Image (cartoon, rainbow, N blue to C red; front, side):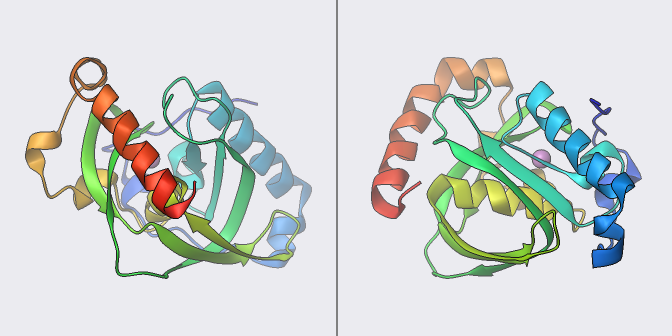
Amino acid sequence: MVLDITQIGNPVLRAVAKEVSTEELATDMMQRFIDDLVETKRAANGAGLAAPQVGVSKRIFVVEVADNPRYPYKPNVPLTIVVNPTITFLTENRFENYEGCLSVPDLRAKLDRCPEIRVQGLDRHGKSLDMVVKGVTAGTFQHEDDHLDGIFFLDRVTDKSSFSTWAEFDKRYLEEVKTSVKAVVARYGS
Ligand code: NI
């Protein structure tokens, strides 16, 4: 079932989401919810979606990129579901990422993200998950993880002159961003 996506201004997006116990994760209700979260992400062409973005204040997010029309320059990422994530930065390096968000209509901006991270947590079946994520994909994971702590990409923007609507972004910055994403992928991997 495709769920409604909460929009900025809704307090659920500013709350710190709750951990999910393995018992709760195993319930049919929670498994159905995870299916709905994936379906909603796909219907909205998101690169990722966090549970608070459908009004559920739990520490779960999904990431998946499959030739995404919203982000044509993003490398593909297989479907990854992370429950109770912990993210550790593996380098002092940062790269500039142009981000948007399904909960922030028609606005994009540039911010710094760590290009090499370790993601630990549980998969949807409660098995431990431990992976290294690199490049622009690492930026996507950090964006989704931030949602679980009530943080928007907007909060991390230092260069306020980079705020842009999607139409202005496509017209003015898309080509430059395609080039910089290629450089990030070449340096760090996807
Ligand atoms: Ni978002």
